[in-house]
Image 1 (spheres, rainbow, N blue to C red):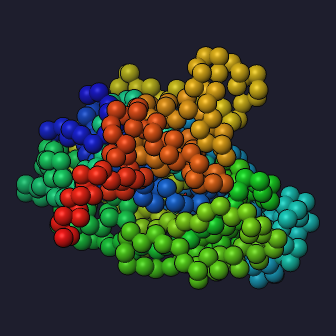
Image 2 (spheres, helix red, strand yellow; image 1 turned 180 degrees about the horizontal axis):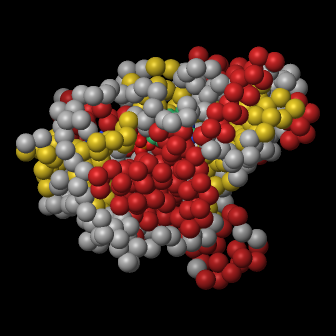
Image 3 (tube, helix red, strand yellow; image 1 turned 135 degrees about the horizontal axis):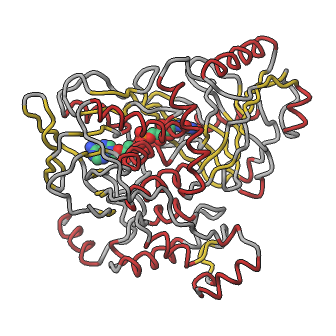
Length: 497
Ligand SMILES: Cc1cc2nc3c(=O)[nH]c(=O)nc-3n(C[C@H](O)[C@H](O)[C@H](O)COP(=O)(O)OP(=O)(O)OC[C@H]3O[C@@H](n4cnc5c(N)ncnc54)[C@H](O)[C@@H]3O)c2cc1C
């Protein structure tokens, strides 16, 4: 089966259907693409990485937080190793910054020492307790009001969008079909065995389904008569700072955690920004990603306890992400109600870190429930390299412009993103279909002006490259059209008359 990406058509049948195009579903699809199987991934949005995988801290956790023996502990440590091996080949930006858990006093130093022991039990290498002087030498802008810290050299940062796109693109290159704008609405069973999946684009026959539907994974389970878990969204708000203050911190700075969350961090991003956040607020609506005055005030106060001189005037945007909370551990395993259904559900933090390791165990579990696996000789484990004009020296930039004049047209001035990179992002196998899809892949619109200047030009390039009218271009979600045609407007006015 040839790989593809876009809103259809849905094939009549597949060996495996994966529901959800977040980092978890895409990593699972890539792992399945190693084998001689027909694999279809169904995603309700126009793009991958539009759920929790687009709004998180982007940290590859070292693995000392989770209790030994849990899925979280095991898959975090394995996932962090897999990213170190895979990132370069898949085009996933990753930086080995290390991380520090900062203790304010002697009591917190005890907690930090416990974290170190837990980390050792989980197999995390290189954990050290640092003195106050060691921490200040590494992080000159940190509050001197602290006692020491836990240093984890394997902590790292990653681009969560390009992680998802990197797995998805590689899965497509190896034959996976990703069908977007397609919502799973039903699961057909015969004698408690999965036999098909119903969607807004028709039915697909299959005996194996992976539930990687994130915040909606509880609803998907119930479609198969499985009410063994419920997802309760927990929102986390963030503030992102401009790249001009990217030197504020060198590593990921956590406070000493409490029982509910890892606390408010101050951390760099792989693209040279700094962010603060997230908080943790229980909510009911799995779409409620609003930021609030109270939430932002709380994260500023929390972050100032670690770095007092926060440059608040350089904030460029704020956003919120939703954790798919369903208890203490991930829900990974065969459904108790439906044969052939395997859950990768309730994947809260460290789900981004764990994703490639989740892919491995889900494939093992599918085999345990009867899926036959025959390795595919043609599997290609890497994606072709994509030049990043901004990161190159002048000589290399000149060579690129000589090879393609579109590298000489800078579309996004804040991030120095060229038209050639935007065209490549649209034309690649997992190509952008929306304005935010371009932003997530190449950062056009991710800088200081947040797309104020380049947004209209990106929109025009999308329309030209996709061969569709400009009125068909959306910002991100399925109904986020940027323009309305006169005919649509007049029809709307008539219906309101
Ligand atoms: C505030 C916050 C901070 C975090 N920080 C980190 C961190 O630093 N490091 C880390 O390792 N992890 C972190 N995480 C966790 C990590 O982001 C998640 O574990 C991970 O993104 C979950 O990915 P997913 O694929 O399970 O879910 P999602 O990305 O939400 O993907 C699920 C997909 O399923 C689709 N879908 C749902 N229902 C249907 C349906 N019926 N039909 C078709 N498609 C459907 C959705 O549209 C969505 O795209 C953080 C999470 C949050 C919220």
